[in-house]
Length: 136
Image (tube, rainbow, N blue to C red; front, side, top):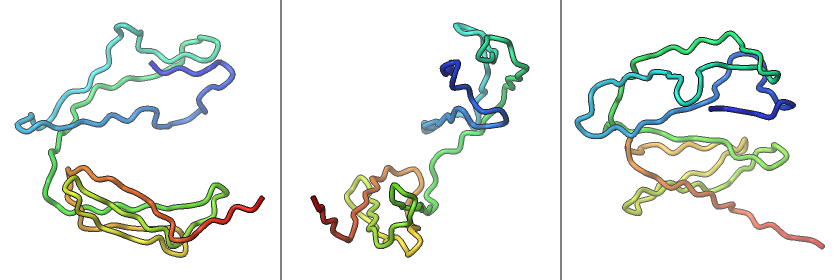
């Protein structure tokens, strides 16, 4: 069930409200069915005034792809609270065995780390390569 206060409705138009992630067990079937039911909550969408809105709920078959040994890449953008890119931030990506890969953000705050193994767990950490001086 998704809900918001009557004075804070969701904006009109298409949007993603929920992301569902699966951990695929070894030996799992190649797909699974996703269905929508009406227990314990009725499958409907209502306005802030509790008027029923026209909505469709579509069942689907979802392919389940297990982890592969293929290399993957992660990337991102680091910016200040005011939205300015921050360069020279050191990014470390460490796997569960302690092996790490590193990257630095460029002048526009972007970074990429290549050669990661799909399906592994990683810890991503940021370390600014500059000092902040507090002035009172």
